[in-house]
Image (cartoon, rainbow, N blue to C red; front, side):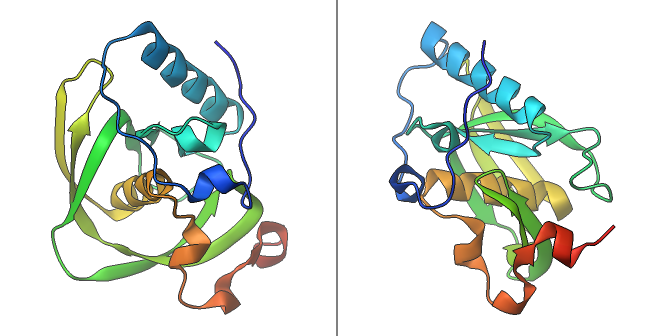
Length: 171
């Protein structure tokens, strides 16, 4: 379909709670998901949420085999997740570096639950129910935050770990 422009931090839509999807398996939903896939692939993203391309719906996609932005990350299976519900499986949090297509050129250390269960639906209305950990859990939490109007800097606890990627990781 099309590569869409990604909204950047400061755009009001990125701070809104997205609307739930109430109709599955529609040409409109399929088109949105294709646009999201095209955009994420073109920008080498690990994930993308519909609000990032200006659509206030609870739709997130994520996954990759390899990603040059996260070279040490384990593979995450490609997933379309609609109307998600996240449930932490343990209290422990893990700090990790994150970046975002809506906060281009920057990275920060963000605490996230290390293990969680996510539930929701695919574009056909089929149930998704997975238990994950590590980078997979981090990516899911990051993308689902977008659906709640939260950007990763809002989760940071130490702004000394926030900066421009080329300064934090030279060469």
